[in-house]
Amino acid sequence: GAGVSQSPSNKVTEKGKDVELRCDPISGHTALYWYRQSLGQGLEFLIYFQGNSAPDKSGLPSDRFSAERTGGSVSTLTIQRTQQEDSAVYLCASSPDSSSGNTIYFGEGSWLTVV
Amino acid sequence: QKEVEQNSGPLSVPEGAIASLNCTYSDRGSQSFFWYRQYSGKSPELIMSIYSNGDKEDGRFTAQLNKASQYVSLLIRDSQPSDSATYLCAVPSSNTGKLIFGQGTTLQVKP
Image (cartoon, rainbow over all chains, first blue to last red; front, side, top):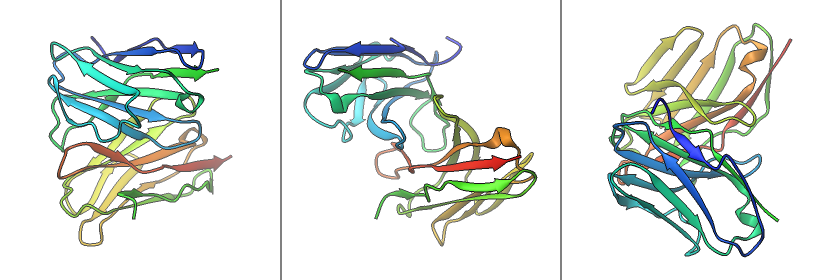
């Protein structure tokens, strides 16, 4: 695709429900990143994938959060039993690979509101 | 110490002035450095990258890197109201490769 595509763009869910956020990276990009940004805050690293493996998942806030990537392409971030503090925009980004010199390109984000 | 630190601001400058944004980082092994701009409600977009000590210029933007001091800065010349945004410094971890962002500096350019 032309850019990183994320869905849904907006999601309102009730506390305690599970949500799935999807990211489709730029075609050919092997590295994929998930970040979270709460209102007025900086970007909080969650996890990144190189291919289908996750070399660094240190940023996942709790065991309610999980992510997977299949076929080296689409990734899904799942939040189980959502809490109000999970409300944020979840940003996905991709890059050609995880070499430190590579630029990462962001999608438009999935805005999650837990009520 | 945070891995990447920025002054959150806001930094307010008059139109036409030079805006200076600063960033320090803790990982001495880092080799590349990025500046992203984020408008309110939008995703970050890359504006500059720098890999070597010294200055790198691109239009009105100049990135400056000093690895010995673990310091990277962004200068915006002839600041315009459209430059008003949050500027994020990003540094890859030399151990894991993940890109670590600072908290961002909010710039306000007043007409």
